[in-house]
Image (cartoon, rainbow, N blue to C red; front, side, top):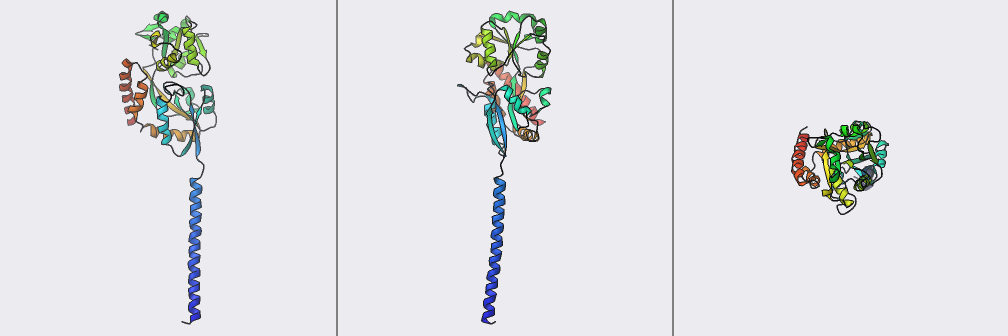
Length: 308
């Protein structure tokens, strides 16, 4: 082969190698850019609505962060890295308003009702709580005696009698059964209290003798009474006939495609949570005589749920 022709062949070979290398480099840059753009694509932001609701959520004070939802929520967030998570403290009215809107929001501590299910997507039960009941000061226990049946208060009969008003937190759901009774209550049978510290205000009214009966969760009432410097032994709790001992707390998300998808993912996570540790967090707030019963029944409840 002539020297000139050999030199031309080497030049063509080098040019081809260069072209191939340049194409590969270009493809590498393209794929790298594509990967970067996918990984950098902004995640959807899930807004968690937090309310001070002892003993499930405690946002202030010496017991801050020791509620069952306080401990459960970080586990859920860690299991959902596909979202950006924002924690937003709201009052009850604002939280419900946001769930009504076309936003991507979830409330980790809601009671299921048929009415709410029209505009909130609910999870499977996330935790169990002691059902609501009536609290009176010990010196006022006589006001409930005409309505006691086997140690439980016939709330429907009490409300119908019109003898005593019952203090309630305005716009709160007490569960399907009690909500129905309260809606059927005669005019002026209830004393609703609004505001961020509604339960504490009702307990103060009770302490001052302006109100005798308050409806609520006993662990929450005990906690709030302590905050209001009211001793446990000054109050007595009576279950409401027909409610059952315990009710379920749920996570509720906005009724939107994002909310429904999030609930599907949340349900999967709820089935894997360390139930024994979480249930103990709630049990620690109960009276010693109720604690073992709660743990036994809650364990059986979630074991049955896991099999479904």
